[in-house]
Length: 409
Image (cartoon, rainbow, N blue to C red; front, side, top):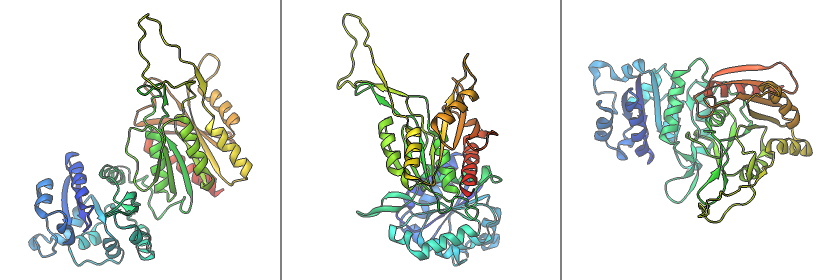
């Protein structure tokens, strides 16, 4: 794939060298087009060495090849990182006084902007208007991460991590028919709370009781809700995949920590997507020292107690506060001699009281840690099931579409 990597003049430009390496190591041909300001942070020689291709900022270089037009015409993908406030403004108004500006005007392929700037710049009405303009034109603009910025200040404006930009960029090309365009954002103005990953219940300072969840499906849900325009809060237990850019992250470890975080953040949410794999039990006592093998050869006995039912508690709190809120749960089920997966799932839907339940048929080689999934979406108001299968990203988009439709109704 032919990629144009535009680089803006910000301190975060040094992180884009890692993004360039991700693209090239994946086998893509990358042409770096920095602004003049960007070369004050990372020099031309670095970009040429990492990309293996010549680097220019001017429309007057390689005039015989009509370079200012050719790059955009031939590109399969354009990524701009860091997209400074100045770049967003120029791109929104179609200014083309350098090679990057010309390339953006000519490109008909997917275009992704990864903003990075100080919080005040990002929140300024002019910047937000420029972002809205770019999205209305079909460009994809990530929300910046929240974190430490240049100097002592912190807040929204940090460049998303290279791995997150890499994943978001490739998703635009790999599945364009299902890509959610920011101009079509069914969850715009909504706040979605997502839990993801598996909880870990300590036995001692070394060991814990956990599960096989990688967090992939919950992370995909957070990204899909973000792409649908929602403000997303992600409560993450143990996960094995990068956190998507542009979401508020809350880290937890145990089921009780997850419960506290969900209770704290749920009142502000229009929808709660409970995808975390919560341990049903925890050790009754946690040893302050590592449990050791006993000389006499006897084995330790570990007593377990039930963890709280977080999903059912969120439903009770919603009713108590009379919230207009949609709650979706996940059920990882296996059938047995007493009932099928769907029979157990319908019982759980009634018991929990949530609005929607996404049912996974789990097993040794199913769901956990995999990149694909097959689920049924059950509803309390509509007994007809919705079957979805494919990549976990595709399943996440289908679930978010269903959530958006339910909220609209």
